[in-house]
Image (cartoon, rainbow, N blue to C red; front, side, top):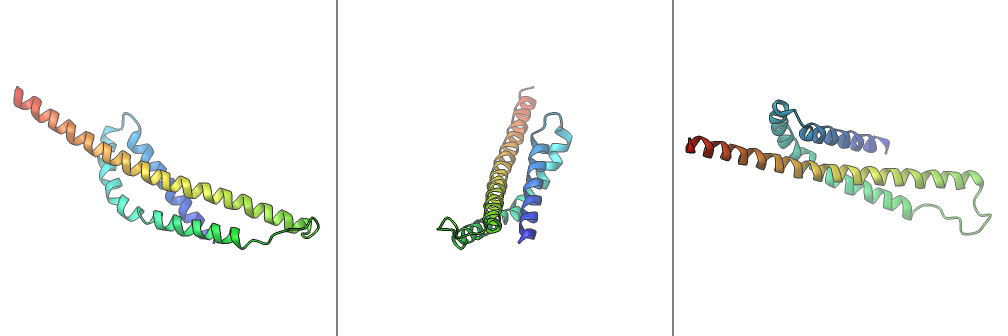
Length: 132
């Protein structure tokens, strides 16, 4: 199951890099090209959402099916340590899921705002030229 988490990590990293390149000031020449790249990449990257939901169900299933130590001496120290490591991994993976979904939503919102801003800037430029 480690490959799924690597893929999700790369997807979240790509989203973060695209978001950073769209929002950094002073990159106007690069931003115009990035807008078209990001807009064309948003639809295929939408697959992150069901993928995250699948991985979230996987975490839930592992949580429900984990062995429990009801009695004080029911688990050996190694089993207890393995259980604690599993909980930490699940928490880390849950944070990765939340980060990937949040980054996708922010990237989608920022991209639509940048597109609207560019279209409004073009309209302002047309009105200025018409008035002159």
